Image 1 (cartoon, one colour):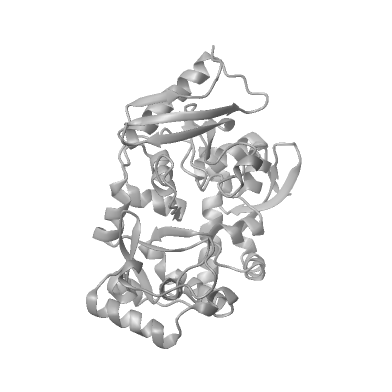
Image 2 (image 1 turned 135 degrees about the horizontal axis):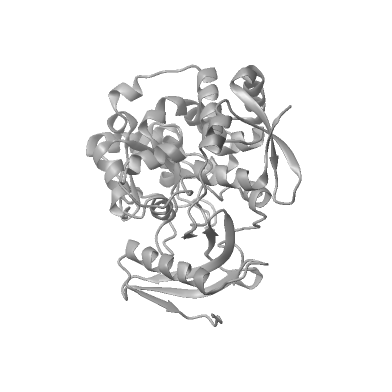
Length: 392
């Protein structure tokens, strides 16, 4: 019989797997956080702070914004590439990421979007310039958009840089004010890492096992979506080959229904060691890995969350950049915050309690305390509520 995991336990297990069950304090090891999560998504939007900084801060609030850039530029401990989106990954994962370089190169080769990209000779010229001059950003090159300019249009040199980056020919050497600098992969990735080679099947096995380890439980679809580096058929084949290394489980959803899933072989030990999550309030980033898979979050927590940055203002249900509020193992509300860095202030522009959640004085105090802590991340010492909210 499959091992049954009730909903409350499943929520605790998921939050523990995501580094959100314990208080975000103590000694800070940024690289270990990234290894534990598998990757950290990058995003350009700086509403309060960029997603990558917020995600790391949520696991340890001693984190500060310059730390990730130093890890990329100074230590060579991480590399940038594409999971389900642009992300940073531990450098030791690079040898099992070769198939992703190949997959994305093939995808681009078959994409109409890249028809206006520089040809092979044009890419070679860009590569030679980087080889001669060192790391360069897109500003070092100049080519004009061929097609009619639109929101997503990019000039040929940017498409060419993208192509070589996706294919693994170029790598991100560092960033300046989030501007990416490209260099030859062999000058960024350590020689001993670059020299490692694994079969495609080995890489698939590693990626699937590593995904399940970080999920603690999930469907084959959950495993495939985790990295975005495997096909559904490959995950199905893997599962059929490792039946003795995984455990069949049934997970209870928030609505009381039960769903079949699989878990790592040590799932019973994980359950025995599971501790209650911290009761403090957490302001999570919209791109936090704990809520990235919206369907999984809705099944486990009954929390229907969508980010609406690309939704026209008049059609938004909530707002442009809305942060989920997590308390213990329960989502209790949503909040819209905007930073004014020059004024050293966080502005709370809107707030929504979750249906059925009562906001008594203690819960408001928890939120106030977390807002103050969030403000410290960007050296903000003032919290201003500019929305009409009745509080006890």
